[in-house]
Length: 131
Image 1 (cartoon, one colour):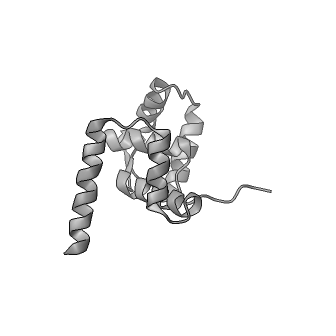
Image 2 (cartoon, rainbow, N blue to C red):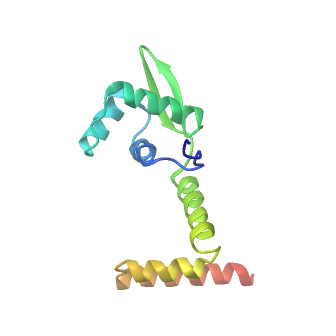
């Protein structure tokens, strides 16, 4: 039985999105080279197939320039991260942001600068809600 279709990008799709968020638009050969530089050497046809799937999923846009297609992200880093994080909060932590943060503190080394930044974010959110 096939795996159910995910509403989030796969690991390879995320790698491609990261490349394109940083520098786009790019042709297939440049995306393939960036993947290889990051340790993921793939056949040209595999990259083309994945890019085509990503266009159909509306993760990417493309435009033909000469003999090549140029690709760019059609979704933002924030849209992807917000969607994936929301899914984790609901599926893993029963909708509790507090449980997520507790798990984060238990599984990650958070330095004092990061703790201070989290305090600022929490204070800003508290001010927004009291307004």
